[in-house]
Length: 277
Ligand code: PAF
Image (tube, rainbow, N blue to C red; front, side, top):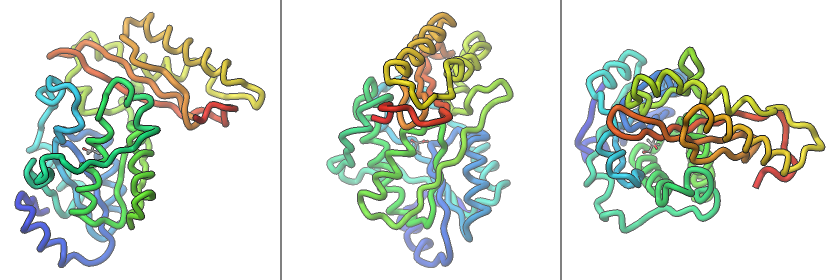
């Protein structure tokens, strides 16, 4: 496995790579969720590339950026053990030579769910992903469905800009107790980690199977029931909402170093009438 920090050198290397390239963009602090994306890439492509870049423009809270975990040595070991061929480590200057003057902005779905209380977050994500895809020129790029809103926005961006890349969504990988794998789990305090699995439990507690005659009002009631249950567990609820046949949630819990925001989503079994806005 080659680790490349010099992006000019990477461009030279990339020109010589033949066959299908699979790409997994990450911000490091890898966990089993990332490992499953890397496995998919290695199994389905001739060459696999992973990037590690903690993208400052997608953090709307400076403390969140400051506390973001970094485990570079273990990350490189994991990537190599899975069979990744190249890891690229771009710098802020490589990614933002323009000082973030040019941005990719989506005006609908990015303003819902996580976009409501995280202004600019998805502009940061879409802009960095567009740049990374331009640098790596993969045939396929892999994203986890834990961040389902991000996955949909990236897929739609690539279609909107006629980009020749397949965006592959991979299922959420969970801890044994059901908590979705996330780099942020490392930041949870012990008591917060002990109850964090109740997040997924609560998201699945209201009727997941939706009958054909269920109305949007029924759906909102079910979302409210989940939000109430989360609040009763002591979580600070950011939102619980149904979109695109999924129930999405975001909560804020106590971390070792300040508050930690967790997101998750569960698939509902059939289409909610009027609920797909
Ligand atoms: O999901 C992430 O880790 C990040 O949002 C991504 C896609 C690597 C962009 O910085």
